[in-house]
Amino acid sequence: MGKAEMCVLEERVELKSSAEKFFMFLKSQNQQIPSNVHTEKLHAVEIHEGEWNTPGSVKLWKYNIEGKEEIFKERVIIDEVNKKITYVAVGGNALELYKSYKAIVKVEKGILKLRIEYEKFNEHIPPPNKYQQFIINIVKDIDANLVKG
Image 1 (cartoon, rainbow, N blue to C red):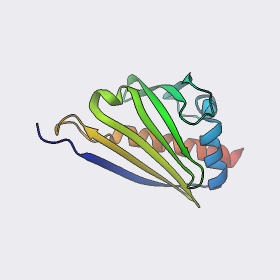
Image 2 (cartoon, helix red, strand yellow):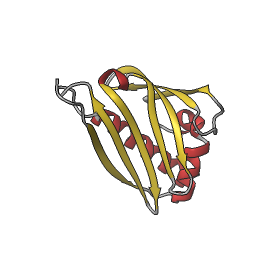
Image 3 (tube, one colour):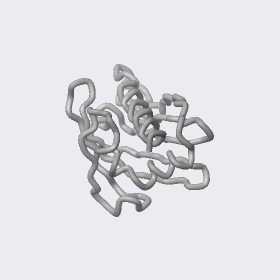
């Protein structure tokens, strides 16, 4: 097995809601995502360590992806200045495939930039496209909800 290397997937999503409103929702109201967002695949989010809005808190997401129940345990790092939130996997299904996995969401004027940084256990493991698409779908649902809201 060769040396593991850090890989990156990047995507941009156009936002119809304001960047400020979107960032505030992600930062402080993510416990409402399962009930507010119309993504039928996202079941629940629970707090495991810390408080909901505490930097470094650990949350457990339960969802269905490609017909399979999965969990994602994350530690959240918030960068207020750059309107950037990093979700670092500390447990769950993603870490069965990837040695390390983190999703970085940066909100700018009219655009959400999604960057997924991951390290594969071996070269036969595919990139996390299914997770990328899953996040994009949730972003679009939140955005549509905020526009209505």
